[in-house]
Length: 93
Image (cartoon, rainbow, N blue to C red; front, side, top):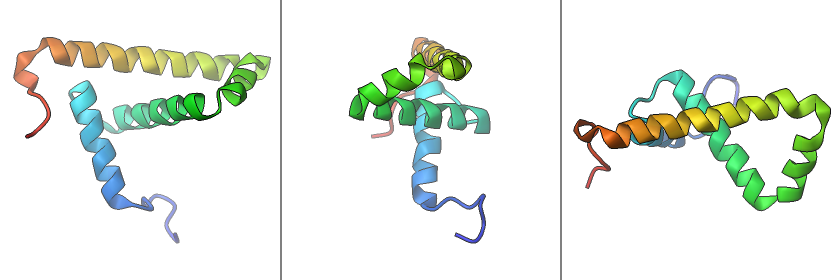
């Protein structure tokens, strides 16, 4: 844990890159970070919905909430585009 940029579990980082690629069609660093935000936020919403509702209701967090909402919509759009293009393939068997 000496290096802040080094992942704690490199294999998980590789899995997130592959997940991002399969979900959106491409695993750029920006897309990977967006998928991480989406995954974490979605999980927190399922596990502690009251916390997320409280956080989202605070005026100081409206901009961040909007950013997360935009990220989720962008991920959905990339996924829809990927699914419409049969040449992108599917999950490996």
